[in-house]
View (cartoon, rainbow, N blue to C red):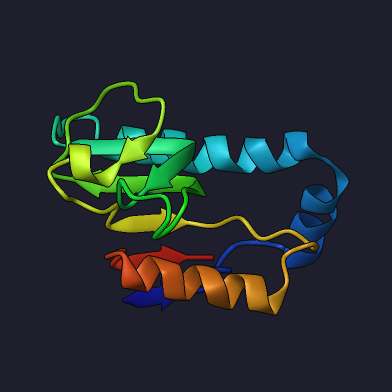
Length: 128
């Protein structure tokens, strides 16, 4: 799995203050990423992009429950609305790309746990 910390062109002090202020600012960043990805892949009917969506990697919730993804990209899946991303109903295809918006409340352990979860269930690229 490739993990990328992308900070080029961002004033991290400003972003941290904005994200620390409100949920509205968090969703503004999620929407910005999602909308730009949708523009980038507008001509690809086989690329599903979503923001703030629950991902169920397996049907057995005793194995693992869902995880809320800030932004996901799944190649090989059709565009369209979904109430959640159930991997077993999506041809077994995991989201290949996940974007995570950090906030001051995210702990290092929480982020390490998410990285391990994503890696275990097939995410190929993880952007923080």
